[in-house]
Image (tube, one colour):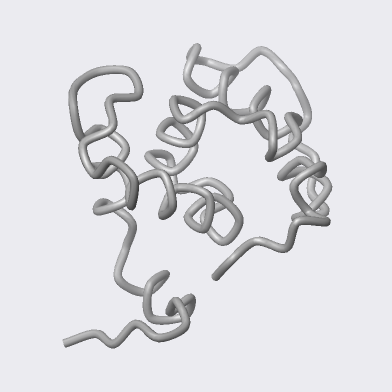
Length: 108
């Protein structure tokens, strides 16, 4: 699940090949997610990862960025509380993990 370095300068929009049309979004969260999809992955902050992963956006590209961060500090605080990035990652549905199993990782 490691992200190739060549993709780090691309945005989620570029990697996924879909552009969200900016309109009058009903919430600030949706506006923020739309905006973050345009940012190159290498420029996303930990807090940005937490937001996008929490909304289950771009998981195939963002989980590989989050795992090393969590490996260094499992309780990294991005926005709200210690462990909020971990909480977002743990909220990812099991079907994602089943289809994106990290190399060398065995599930019980």
